[in-house]
Amino acid sequence: MSILVLGGAGYIGSHMVKTLVELGKDVVVVDNLSTGHRQAVNEAAHFYQVDVRDKEALSAVFAQEPIEQVVHFAASSIVPESVKDPLKYFDNNTGAMITLLEVMKEHAVKQIVFSSTAATYGNPVNIPINEQEPQKPINPYGESKLMMEKIMHWADLADGIKWVALRYFNVAGAAADATIGEDHNPETHLVPIILQVALGQRPEIKMFGDDYQTPDGYNVRDYVHVMDLANAHVLALDYLAKGHDSNQFNLGSASGFSVKEMVEAARTATGMPIKATVAPRRAGDPDILVADSSKAREILGWQPQYDDVSDIIKTAWQWHQQHPHGYADKGDK
Image (cartoon, rainbow, N blue to C red):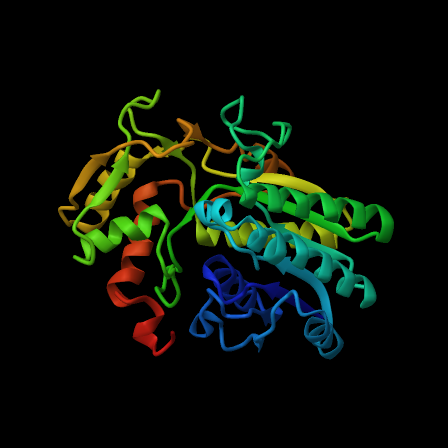
């Protein structure tokens, strides 16, 4: 039987595929390559260039492959873009989930692990954020993901499709062997932007605001290593395979790191003098966003291997040094 990874050519999805293949699993990948990279997909996986919203094409994949479980990473995820173009996010994210669940129902596939987001919580009241925190998204991206969770809930009640939603903030790092890593265009994530400064591809890193109510004045975020995240999805698949009910889990470091700490850790990890300047705050940036992952640790048995942010950055630095232009260095787009 096979595991289908939607969005398996993307940053997190490709690391998930690598993890599953190395565990000896039969893996099927569906990705439309709008933001993903064909070169990132492990050669042992069966690849289909299909858009999840294309019901006929997606159903054909299910008809051809013995799919037993689904892992869903195929979603647009840039918050500012979602504010500018909300309909794109409700179409590509929420609408596609409806199509996926219809196809799963038709082919009697009953288990799905969903890559959700802690953005469904909006501006939380309690830090660190646990699963009981009210979900009140403040942007279309978070709203689209929350709607996807709700749709799965009702599909479970009606059709018995069991699901796990994994909610997290910032993902960083790369595979330890530097064969795959993070490559977005445009790049919006902090760690690769910092490393682009280290590579001389950017003149400096702008730290937005130094007057937050935090120990050093810079806003604090959660960072999880991409391989630790992939392992959490594997554990969620095992959880569903054992017949457990649908559930939701937060994934995070519990402590969090400020932007300044991330820059300083990158200087240590790379040995490069990374220039950083303070810029005005961005509207709507909360002081601290840190997820409480104790439920995932207790129930799923999740034990992150990368607790030191410098170690996380070192793996990303290895990837960026060997692939300064991302997958373009491997002949991909």
